[in-house]
Image 1 (tube, rainbow, N blue to C red):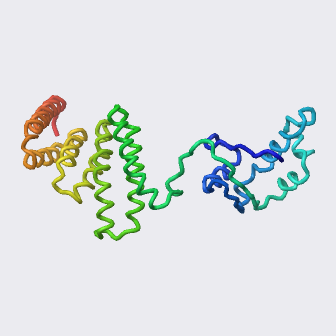
Image 2 (tube, rainbow, N blue to C red):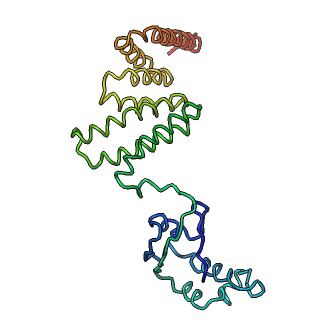
Image 3 (spheres, rainbow, N blue to C red):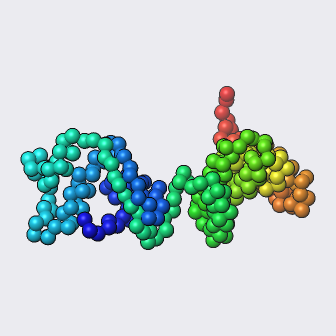
Length: 268
């Protein structure tokens, strides 16, 4: 065709498999790919568009209605045949340049790249959290956690390598839990803080955040237990804990009064 094709990723190109292929390639690489026919049903139309683009305007067929498609096809015998008899296709591609960096999916990263991405993702999450962008921050933390969990699958739980990765994961879980706490996702906070406490039973941050989440989910007994443990482990937080315990007592009295009013005069 004489001119390289430009493909902008993430713009819903009709032949999505080409986007997937390109993202696996290195700069200046030439590779051949065999693609199942189920993934290239739209290829005849893509090929027609590309071929037509190199014709003079007066010779282009801009419209292809249903009737024309059935009677005349799309204007190219080989493409018409391919539409009648679909088959697997082979593509030979050369990646000539990458004008802008694109973000590769996690499955495309090597183990070293996954490990290297964790500190960066954590810092990006921290910066977003400082700006009050909890949802965006939680997505960064979640991505970093996913990288570590993938690496941990290759190690035996309890071994040194696994423990090193787990030690990186725990603070990310706490950060993720804080985001969810700010968003009112109390059960998610309870789940993730409980995971941290399995490895670090005396983690004050995990106990404090789980205690707060138990208040939000209204599990008063569990909240008291966590908060009282926080005060034991870190006495300088006793005043903050006392304030939360007072809120629990006040909320219980309020709920008890509401229940009494609701059932007053009723027989059971």
